[in-house]
Structure formats: structure tokens, C-alpha cells
Image 1 (cartoon, rainbow, N blue to C red):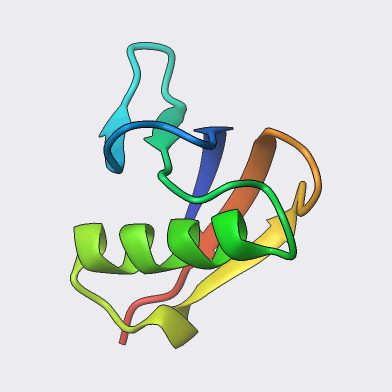
Image 2 (image 1 turned 90 degrees about the vertical axis):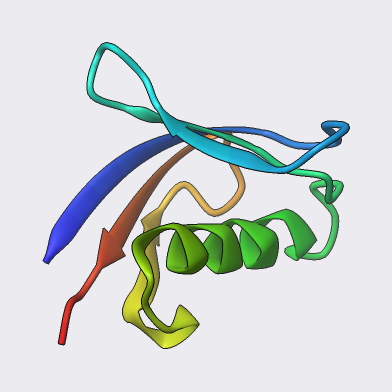
Length: 75
């Protein structure tokens, strides 16, 4: 099980997910932060990056903020 601290930048031109030197992750998302669309895209992006299902990625905290805590479980 991995716990990731992610800084989110919505409304970006392209979607990307990359590690930062301080141990956090930066997620740039195309989706706007409206009706949970950015959170859905973030979960899909993290699942694709780690090669797991979306159901294995859980948003633990920060649902309405730019700093989020995600948990990735592995089978």
C-alpha cells in the first residue's frame, strides 16, 4: 500500500503525473475542478501510472483542495 501526497493543477493543457524532488507528486489535469471531475481524472491518471484498477486508488483527504492524499493498494 502506497500513500501519495499530490499537488493538483486543474485546467492544464495536458494531463501529466510526475514525482517532485521533495517526495510529493504533481498532477496536471485537463478537467476543471467542478462536480468532482478533476478528482475522477486524478484517480484514473494515478491508476494508469501505477498499472492498477481505479478501485485500488482511494482519495483519503483533500477532496476540495489542491493538496490531496491518495492511497494506492496493490493486489
